[in-house]
Amino acid sequence: MNKYKSIYMQTKNPINIEKSGRVLIKDLVNIVADKEIKNEIGNIEMVRIDIKDKKHIVIPIISLVEKIKNIYPGLNIHVIGEDKILLKINTIQKNKNKFLELIKVFIVCSILFLGAALAINHFHADVDMGKAHSDIYKLITGKENQRPLLLQIPYSIGLGIGMTIFFYKISPKSTSNEPSPLEIELYLYNQNIEQYMLDKDKNN
Image (cartoon, rainbow, N blue to C red):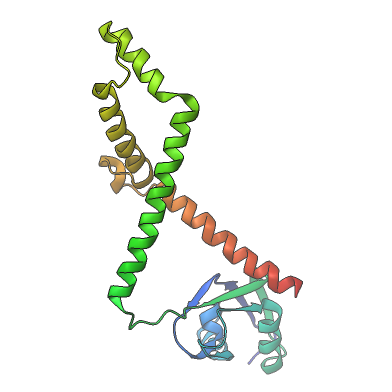
């Protein structure tokens, strides 16, 4: 190998691992180089993992460069991307009890439903929504009614439909590539978790 040859590597971050075994350099970075060098470097084993040991592994990019330099000391290496690579190890078993999973989903959905119902109920109590509906009903019909169901029922239905449309984009535009607010929140949550893992490893 010509000692003046160069390679360019771009980090992949994060990387999901679902089974035990060897993790090669080509699994961690995208390599741009001559075909021969690319194949040789890409097939270098960087780490061997067991999914039962940890939930994640952080690999400093400097250790990857050092690994390559030990084998090819004359190679010029240019790295693009993060200074650490996060390996997220999937420890969820594939042969799960579906009935148990359904029970868990039901419990979580019930808790979320009750929590949302209480939040909306307390908000309406704080702003005295019942009186507001009564005032609107009197303004339209000219009659007093402490429980104007003609307004309250459509309002309740519209509240649920509106939140569903807002979060899940149930509309003709839902086929577009624009993410929904829920997808954005999930993305930001995952991004914060990944950054926490990297920062925690840096402080240890």
